[in-house]
Image 1 (cartoon, helix red, strand yellow):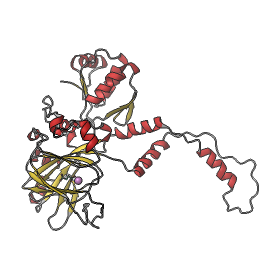
Image 2 (cartoon, protein in one colour):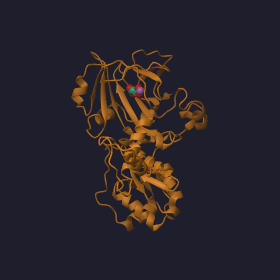
Image 3 (cartoon, helix red, strand yellow):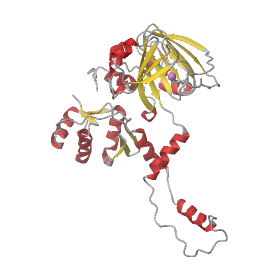
Image 4 (cartoon, protein in one colour):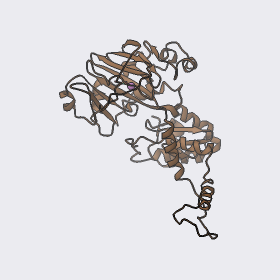
Length: 384
Ligand code: SIN
Ligand code: CO
C-alpha cells in the first residue's frame, strides 16, 4: 500500500469551482441522474494527483485491481497485474485502468471525498486510467453515475443518450454496436464531465492522457434481492418441524397433498423481515471491504490506556480503506456492526462523516474500548 504523505494539504474543496458555480443542491436538483454536466477548470490542483508513473507502478501490484484494454488489431482486454516490460512492448493504442486509486493515494482519496455532497452509501471508488495517443475503452455505457475528471493531457469525449443499448457480440469489452453521440467535447487538465447512468460515451486520448473517474454505484433490483436473501438465510430461525399425525391414505401416492402445501406455506409465512432488517443488510453490505482489500493492524499496538491518552491528545482518523456508515444509532464498520454507546452516537457520526475526529475528551470509556479494538484491527489510525 502506497501513501503519498500529503495528507495535511487537502485537495481544493471549493464546491462552487467543482460544480461550475452550482451549489450541490442545484446540481442534485437539475443534473444528478438527469443530464450530463461539463465543468471547465473544476479541479484546479489536478496536477497534485498521482501521475502516469505512479499509476503504471500500481498496475504491477497484484493486490490492486487493474485492466489493460487495447485496440491494436481488434479489441483485447486483460486483467492485471502487468509487468512494466509487458506494457512498454504492447502495441499502441492502449489504456490501463486502475480501480480504487483512493486506497493507494491520500490525494486521490481527498479528491474523491470532495464529492461528499452525495451519500457515501452510493460511493464506489476513484478509478484512474492512462491511455496512449488514440487510446480509450470504446463507446459504451455504464450503470454508474460518474464524474470523469481530466488529468494530464487532453481527451475527446463524445456522449449521447441513446435508447439502443445493443453491444457488439463476442468482444472482451462492452462496445456499443450503433454509437450515436450528440455532444462532442475536448477536456483539458482539471475539466470534469458528469454522466448519469446509461449515457453512452466514448473517450479518446489526444496524445497521452489520464482520466480520474469518481464512480457512484447503483444496484440492480435482482442483485439486491439475491444478496438480501443470502443475508436473510443466516438470520432466519424457525422452530418446529413438519408433522402429519392425521395423515390419510391418498388416492395418488405421487401427489403432493394439499395438507402438506398448507402446512409448509404456514411455516414459511413466519419468515419475517422489516425495515430494520433491511437497514442492517444495507449497513453490512455497503461497508463490506472489496475482496482485494486487506488492513494493516499495527505491529505493536498501544495498550488501551496509552491509546486513550494519545487519541485524546491527537485525535483519530479512519484508515483510508475503512468504510463506516450509520443509520440512526446503528453503525456499521467494514462489514460488521459497530456497537456504539448511545451517549456517544452524535460524536461518532462526526467521525463517520468527516472520517477524522479530534475532540475525543468527552467520549465514554466504553467507546475508547471500541475504538481501541478497531485500532488494533487496523481500521482506525491515530492522527499524527
Ligand atoms: C477511461 O477512463 O478511459 C474510461 C472511463 C469510462 O469510460 O468510464
Ligand atoms: Co464508462
